[in-house]
Length: 277
Image (tube, rainbow, N blue to C red):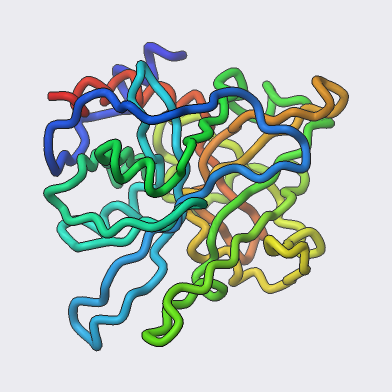
């Protein structure tokens, strides 16, 4: 399957930016303890046509591959940001990144993007960068333990606003995903030879980072690119790995579509050399 993913699914991505060397940032790597929160990045860009207001655009997270840290997000988020100045907001701080200060690789067809930025900016974002292991064995529902708990993390647009007087007010969301479902027929990813995961969205299990419930399905907008964590019940006290990246939500079917971590790993292997090219 890995060879199929590499050879047939991952065509040459759009590539913008500069040459980057392997990072020199303090990194912690492993599983996420149950109840812990992963390090999430908020992508924000500036409206170029209106009042130049900064707006939340999507979510992302860091992965470690062959000594290089990449920030993973959705391809449609990267496409919206291409060529624009953007702000990345992490758990430790924020950085303003111009197009010539980063390397951005993305492909809208498979809706995946990898961004690399210099070590100074990484340290500003994360302090110590915590990279969670990819659970690359889960390719679809048939491979998954039905007793596992899947949780999505990200920054919904409706809850993350910029004010000229007070700056950004950051509010992350955690959504416990429900039973696995068929991928909706209108998914733009359905016709591709991609392994996909799809989950029912349980409106009773949508919570912000203050553990306050929000049962509006629209709260998911802006969480594109956020990680989906898989906590295996009973194994290592529920320690979790990244099962995939959230790409789509379908209101009618109340279904979230997730690209599995195996596809992220294949992209890192297939596109990775371009980060240093």
